[in-house]
Image (cartoon, rainbow, N blue to C red; front, side):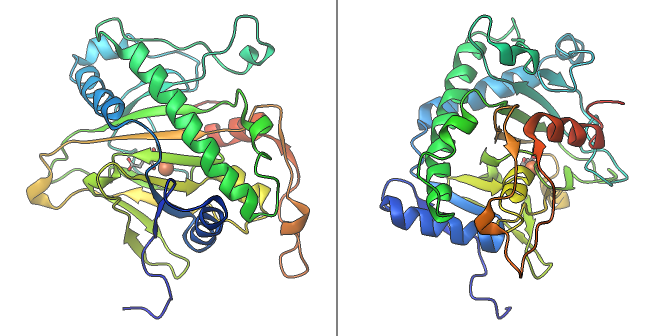
Length: 314
Ligand SMILES: O=C(O)CCC(=O)C(=O)O
Ligand SMILES: [Fe+2]
């Protein structure tokens, strides 16, 4: 046992806490861990269950069929990314995962379309487009409620993030980690920090997700069934001048006797609008915590980071 006050990421109810209490609880958990577990998040269980079954059906397609949905030059931002493509920043082995990305559907003629490629959808899986569009919208809505709490915690109006995330460049990722052989080098996902504002992750109850605490220990984060692991990404860390830390996390391989079991998860990477300037909030810059990073647009920051994780070149 360590002497820290909180040893586990707390579980918070978005329905049962009042707004002010939720704001303090999520802010405190983010400040300590960069993570929180949120239950009663309002995303329909049946919709999530439909998402799991369609994601499993897609990843079960032959490799060749999946590769038809690679988007050349798209930086892995839409459609399929094959097993072994992504590598955590600074890691030596590629991750043991394949994934599918759903991005925002913009209204016809929206100028933001220059930064956000259209979606592709697999024609083999009936209901895929409709289900993941509905899940995208549900994650977006839950994320916005969580960010209202974060805004209040930071002394901002509850709606501060609303205009900044409206039509943001958010991505729903469907992840498949196939069974792992006993000799496999690497881990399911190497230690990394997320690029975006916050991440809402479904599926972590399967086990394997670990976070690095301020004391440098790796601890598991295992939400109750249906609960979401929520974490601070680098954009929120930069906006808060590191008051809210973007915590390193990873997905470790299961013990040898469970390596034949695949893992599925579904993170929603909630992004700012590409044209929003990420500039440290004045209340987060103090003599004890001087300004750490200069302002940058969400678009420029994203592309700088995608190059580092092997998803775009140049
Ligand atoms: O699969 C997980 O539990 C975590 C995934 C993750 O951290 C990511 O894709 O950024
Ligand atoms: Fe992550």
